[in-house]
Length: 227
Image (cartoon, rainbow, N blue to C red; front, side, top):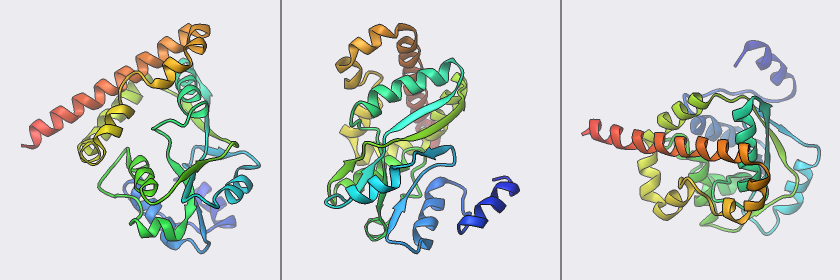
């Protein structure tokens, strides 16, 4: 992170940095937190005004909460990402959603985020939390700034993350297959929205299919050369 941003953060909060991957950083944040509740967001996410209030009010009776995301940014592929997430996450309770608000004690009880899983660590955490209780969903949303999405940048990222996918696949075979199948149930359910936006729909399906293929290829190749 740029030094100027570190200085800004330190004016309002405690700043820690571990690494190299997100699971280690998040576990450090959970451990160092002084409060009862934890909210996990990425550096490219922005909260809308009522998110915290609704999370606090809705956590009772749930072990954790998911927060709907609206993707923003520039470029055609960013629009495709935003369109796909609107269908599969904002309109639905998709299998790819991950809890972001929970109690510190509950997170520590399951051992935090698995540091051996990269790319799907938040999904793994979500399903381990779900095994302990009910996960709710608030109506307020956060913005996810995708910047300017690169088609091949997304493919490269999925290929990189595939190195940890085998462990996740063994842990949640049915969930993993459903999550990474190119066509989601939400696409079929909201087919009218797809028909009204054929260009974005086509781009979203093309991008998702390419991501799935890249992940599958990486899974095969990395397993082959690891022997």
